Length: 323
Image 1: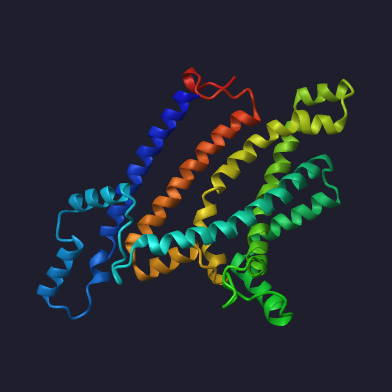
Image 2 (image 1 turned 30 degrees about the vertical axis):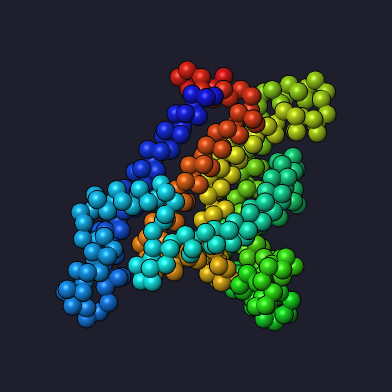
């Protein structure tokens, strides 16, 4: 286990290094690069040189990269080009706001989809299974921004039951009850999308496991169906589902750009769209690095959960074999 973790950490460091190189290179390769953002129209050549020197953009690209990485290691994400505001002051509040929204939606999706998928695998083609198929089709096919706008039109504008957008009502910042009301509509949108995937994956995985010989043997011995499902089938069926969950973990901080934009939720997904339009490359690079780090952590957690869900998986064995 220790050797495996060390190897994965080294791989993660290498991947992050490559991501920093690519992100920094793309920033300078973009049309106009950071210069186009920071230089005001009509500036004299002398003023442009002074501005470039103040921002360190007059130095070779590799020197700029080394300084940027050095600052990252010290927790300095840099400053915006237009207003010279620390990136951290803009980024970290949005990360928390997105985490609040996505963790509620993600947790609710797990609580609904996984038990629903397990139940449908035991009642194949029943009413519940057919309803789940309809929900899945809607979740996959229906544009999230359209669904969000429809919810706003009906529940916020016509019935006036829920807030239209934002995270808090002005003057009620920090009130939990007001936050819950603002969460209902965006969480409904995100939950539907997540359920569409999780309930199908869980059902399909359970059906595959229930066809295995050892399940038939357990049933032939007279074991109760509930014990067969939860003691023998579920643990193996959850392995592919864990993969999907691990890959979705980065969304806890990455957010959902369309949903956050529709509901004006001050999260990182909306921030990424705004900074892309404004060409604030320092903010975009920080967001990219944070999401990449979450992807790596998600994959590592998925591998570790494999060992907990299925005792046959032995991480770190020679040759990487699983017994």
